[in-house]
Length: 178
Image 1 (cartoon, one colour):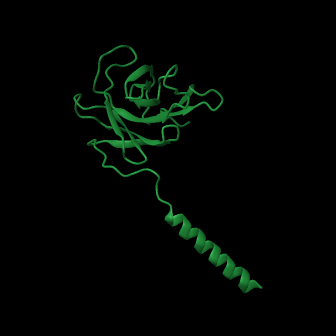
Image 2: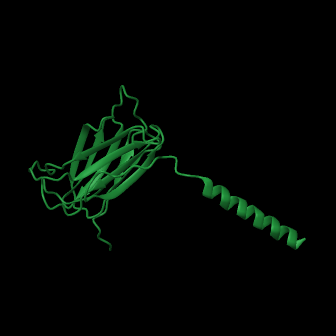
Image 3: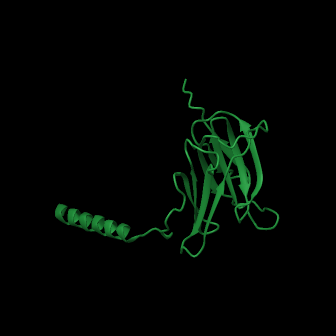
């Protein structure tokens, strides 16, 4: 009886491993077109049926470069969008295009409907001087943006409220541990 159970268990485990190896990613493969970036966010967007990537340039040497970028690719590589953004001023209105971006988190807005709610994607990011939030339209255009004076040396994380779609929580750390 013990041999039968052990053989059955071995066959079941082998079948499970074979079926899990046969599953492939549902999204396609595409070359990443931004130079000198660090990928900081990657999420599946179930409403749009795509995948969204957020990246940033750490310790940017020149103000001419973009601070962060967002890429959206669908599961069949039929459509691919890439947008680059530059942070241009801090929370006090001081023009400074050489911020040290510490990362972004970008997600899909589940409340998007294309008519009354135009924000398709939302993001939170951090620099050495501030945390910022932006909502983006379907073409990557900035719809709303706001920043708060708060030094963070790590990327903030943004999550959508489960109870109230279209409202978001941003969590950040200054790295201080008491």
